[in-house]
Image 1: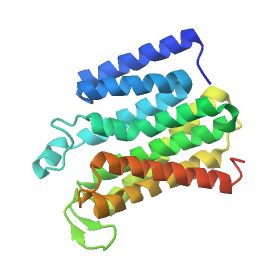
Image 2: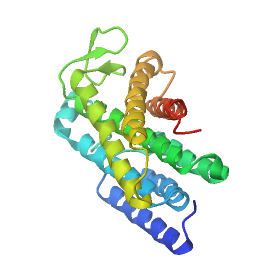
Image 3: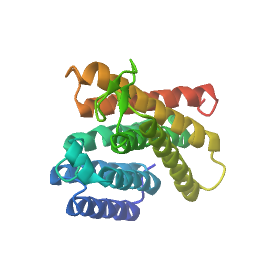
Image 4: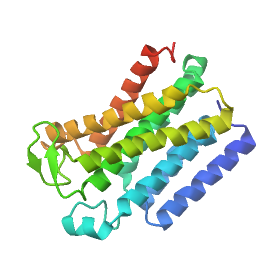
Length: 253
């Protein structure tokens, strides 16, 4: 879908205002704010307000998680940015694929129905929330273990996981799915496949978070991937798994 001109103009203006606010509050660097605005404008114009709203809520939740007990994270040297701000790499890692989904849907027309698109988009951001929550809350757990070998590692180590971090990953993925379902119901009315949102999206998001950890330990630690590319591939795995589950359950035929 493409928003009518008036709605599209309002959406772009709202996206600009949100990007300015994110930079002004220190949530994003200036360059990251510009990129977020550009991609966000595409999302709202081609996808609609529910897609933008879910993205904004994801960013807001990520900022809160990043700044939670920030001084303690700084002392342990596991903090994000200088003051908790997110830069270009982090923004691109989490916004390129959601934007690509909306663009593909626009080009494909009816070949990518609305419900599968919404679930895939939700799964992508469910991964983002799961990964962010697991990282930002998990580093405060005090201990972690390698996702592959189970040996103790320092919190914040690529591939290190903790029970608290994994539980927060579930919370992030599930919360994203619940909020997404509410937003899309408000936009299109009842009748959406609840299980697709509340089962497929969080399962895919959480699984993608585990893929991210495995890639972090096996490739990022060897400097074959950057943090941003690891996040990108983790999100891609969540989208692919969600697509497989949608087809397997008959939601996407």
